[in-house]
Length: 150
Image 1: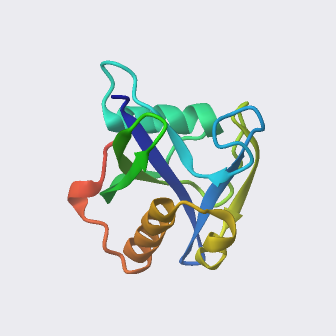
Image 2: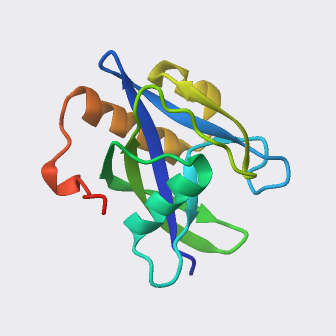
């Protein structure tokens, strides 16, 4: 079974989180859908290492803060008849960060929590962004969730 990760990128704008979403390119899986960063974990790679690698590949950016969201994205994929349990990570970027898009995406957008339902359609992704939002605005990120970036 393939190992996958999700990365939820945000910035803090006057104390309010804004989330970075990407529009998938026409010739990629999930074409024309707004999504967060996601990807496969390579052999001999830890989940958190894959999250950092995917962030760099898909944006060219380095996190200001990096932590594991205390939940997973769970869904059933009929095509492969697999139930996926995908670790979720949060990445804070500087407010003036501008992603450099790779060929997987055609555009990006920073959105507020109020705009979430207009962009994302996957219930688990929306749930994880809402959880991340709540943890951020209530200052509830535990030290055990923080990941030191080498």
